[in-house]
Amino acid sequence: MSKSIRFSLIRPLSMVPALAFAVSLGVPLLAAGAAHADFRVCNGTQNLVGVAIGYRAQEGWTTEGWWQVPASTCATLIEGELQSRYYYLYAEDAARGGRWTGDVNMCVAENEFKIVGVEDCFARGHQRMGFKEYDTGRQGSWMVQLSDAPSTQEGQN
Image (tube, rainbow, N blue to C red; front, side, top):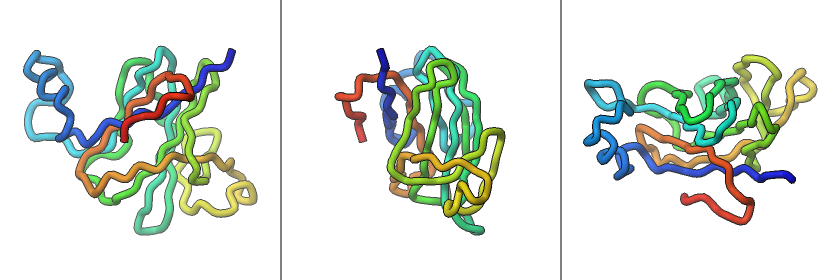
């Protein structure tokens, strides 16, 4: 039985009401001091997940990976204030082989990578995967929640 996996979107950190509630309970979500601005991915599954991100940089379209995100934890993929409006994400469940994908083709490699350019992935010795696009609306912070879900359910955008 194959289980479909989906991306679930959590709006910018500044707009998450649960964050304020969790902080009031003393949950250590953010380090003490100034507010963090970054792009984070949280793994809501029970398995290790490998994550890759794509974005527009000064040198051109760039993809980077792999972040290994253990079950029920989060990872910061981009530290600091976000510079682009659009970011792209691809992830794989290390144990079950499920994938979080989208319609935007970008290059990935088998091991740790930073690839400039999204064209001719195979000819350049890389793989091509479909990344999901996230429109951050130019927010300074963004967080994506990865979770198991039936394919008939849609995430909140």
